[in-house]
Image 1: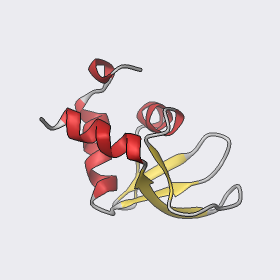
Image 2: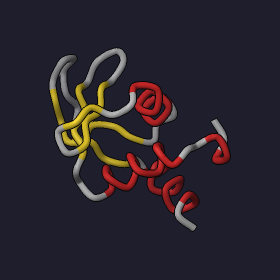
Image 3: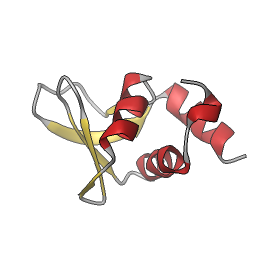
Length: 82
């Protein structure tokens, strides 16, 4: 997925994660919530699948952890907001 493929939804989710407002449910296909509301599944798959967002710590399947930006996620967000 190239930078031009990201939408405003992706950018908003990345910003919320950067602000510490995200939770991730670790699973084969992760689920992501921001401010207690589930995020778009497709956008979540894009962000987690591309290694831009992940759990703050290693957690077993089904566990919830704070979501954090990876280095790649922080770099992508910087490109999206400039």
